[in-house]
Length: 71
Image 1 (cartoon, rainbow, N blue to C red):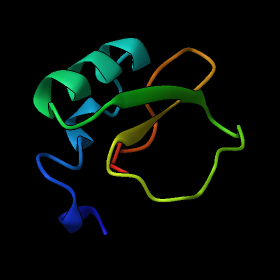
Image 2 (tube, rainbow, N blue to C red):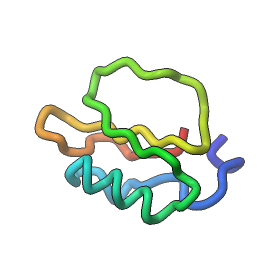
Image 3 (cartoon, rainbow, N blue to C red):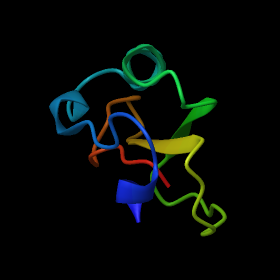
Image 4 (spheres, rainbow, N blue to C red):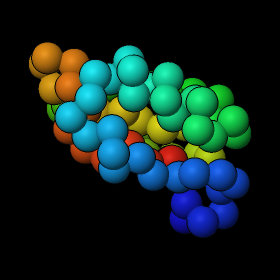
C-alpha cells in the first residue's frame, strides 16, 4: 500500500535511535507526512491505512524498535 503514497515511505535507518529524533527526521525527509507519532510498544493503535501518518514504535527507554513505515 505504501506505493500509493508520495515520497519516502520507510525508515529502517532509524531503528535504535531516539523516538522523538526519529519523528523529526521523518517529517524532514517526507514533507507529505502530517504526523509521525511516537508510540510505546504494546500500545493499541488504529489499523486504518493513511499516507499522512507514521507510527514510530519505541521501547520503555524511548528507542525505536521497529522500522517506521507510512500507514
